[in-house]
Image 1: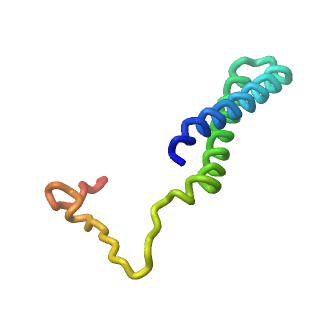
Image 2: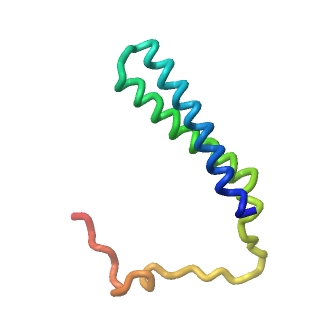
Length: 93
C-alpha cells in the first residue's frame, strides 16, 4: 500500500493544478487583475489538495492505520516528563 502513495500524491497535485488553473483563468476573464487571479488559483489549489488528501486518507490511509486493541495499556507521556527540566512552560505575561 505504501508504494502507491507517491502515485496518489501526483494525481492529487495534478488535479489540484487543473482546478487552480481553471479558477485563475476564470478570475482573470472576469476581473482582468493578475493579483486576484493568482489568489483565486492559489486558494483553489490549497482547497483541492486538502479535500483530496482528506478523501484519500478516508479511503486508503485509514485502513493502514495501526489497530488499537481494547484492553491494552496505552502509555501517555506525562507533561512534566516531556520537558527536559521538568518545569512548566513560561507564562505569557
